[in-house]
Amino acid sequence: MRQHIARAPAKVNLQLSVGPLQDDGYHDLVTVFHAVGLFDDVHATAAEPGAGISLSVTGVQRDLVPLDSTNLAWRAAQALANHAGVDPDVHLRITKGIPVAGGMAGGSADAAAALVACDSLWGLRTPRAELMEIAATLGSDVPFGLHGGTAIGTGRGEILTPVLTRSSFWWVFALAEGGLSTPAVYAECDRLRAGSAVAAPMLSGPLMSALRSGDASEVAKNLSNDLERAAVSLRPSLSRVLGLGEEYAALRAIVSGSGPTCAFLARDGEHALDLSVALSSAGLCRTVVRASAPVPGAALV
Ligand code: ATP
Image (tube, rainbow, N blue to C red; front, side, top):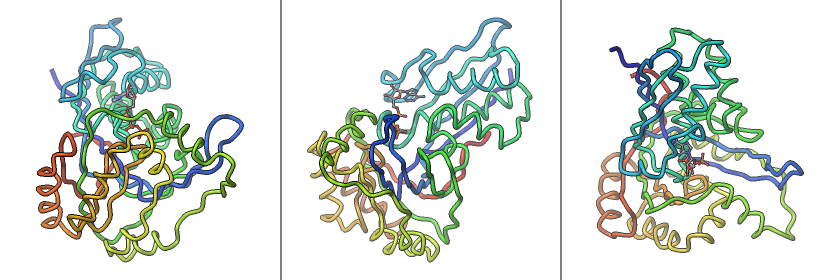
């Protein structure tokens, strides 16, 4: 039986500026997404007519991933079937390479990959713009999972504008034992900022220039993450992991999104290898992985 396999990347936020808490409970964001070469695969296989959706997960953190309709890949398959007016008969098998609840948008990557895999399985040829619209209904990071590359995200992160970058960058990621809940990190951010005026978020001009020039040191200087303080507040051990960046001469160390994954920008591939060996030997994290970026969004394998 033919398998329809799609692969989608993780992301790191090069800028994550969080505006004040709105009345609807959300925050306006200005973010710069960067798709990194760390992937989940979603295999879609045909199921008997009327069988509906079923799902299985492989990978070291499979026990942390829901197997029911709360899984974002499941929701994506259902949303695409509704949109196209087809029966959602499919088995989805997710192979996780992206840390779960790690601040790298793994669930969103799975949703993006499930849209692409099911579109292929059901022979729909849904126009890209429609897939992007469905993606935005599933979560604010899902459109970027389809888009990939480097892109500015505004609104809740779902309104994307591509950014042209001159070169590839090398990253090392320290993956933590256990995750952090994104809503809990936002709540902690609000708690830490209570009583102080929070400005409307603005895109960083120096970061855009650095990306255009392709100079990793300039990019490093201009990385920012408004959620970092909150993530470290909830998981104080992260400050030691971030401190290793300076010790081992990373260009910069930051928390990825809502954490607890820590991202280290390296000068080049060789530096990334040295850095990953040093970080692994420090023994402060579950595992260390290297990845280059930017990479394309969800696509058939
Ligand atoms: P983000 O940075 O987008 O806020 P994250 O990378 O921190 O998210 P995810 O790995 O996307 O976190 O998972 C967050 C939670 O979503 C998990 O704890 C899990 O309960 C649930 N979840 C739903 N679908 C998935 C999926 N396909 N893979 C992983 N987690 C999923």
